[in-house]
Length: 253
Ligand SMILES: Nc1ncnc2c1ncn2[C@@H]1O[C@H](COP(=O)(O)OP(=O)(O)OP(=O)(O)O)[C@@H](O)[C@H]1O
Ligand SMILES: [Mg+2]
Image (cartoon, rainbow, N blue to C red):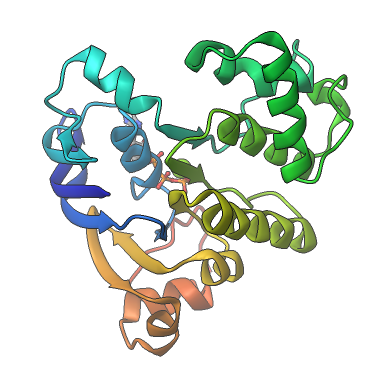
């Protein structure tokens, strides 16, 4: 379980997150919504220990990662997988080497077991037989799936997805959404997913939280999102430029 208490993050005098409290329960997918620049990536990076919060605690399996030693943090990080906003594959490595990357660093599997695990994970994301290709040979959707295969290869307990469907066509987005659901149900992972894609968010989420100006302004199930009269959520879901969320404008209407 992930338990966030009074989490804040500032850069200089710019406050990005101001005292967040929420939980991700074991085995659920929690989706984080929020407009561009609200601190969703900062939140994910803080939870996986890539960024140090200014205040507050981040409890993972009962340990506060903001206070533990770097060795303890490293042990907890072995349980966490991060699918970056851009797939972040190594261009000079083959797909096989990319997927094996975390395995080599985080496990002591033999070469033979590693090859088998890579094949298994690629097959799980629907990409059998592409081991020898390079990232430049792949479409955007394939790259995302290879990035997910790389993450699940070392069997994390938690997966953090930063905009897993952004930049993909609607059908490929749906394939990725189905994959996230499959991994939750079959590998029993607990996931946090940042998304702008309302269709995907609705499909994959057990619960949804919405960030606005550094705070959580809504927390509920997808059904509760549909039914809420919270003006901020309504505007975000409908994608209107009119409403409480100020769209950044570079032109005058
Ligand atoms: N290392 C950093 N130094 C200074 N400011 C930063 C740093 N990282 C993020 N920020 C600022 O924090 C704010 C939130 O950034 P973040 O990347 O979390 O937004 P986001 O919600 O993920 O947006 P998007 O949906 O566009 O990905 C932004 O104003 C950004 O400029
Ligand atoms: Mg982001």
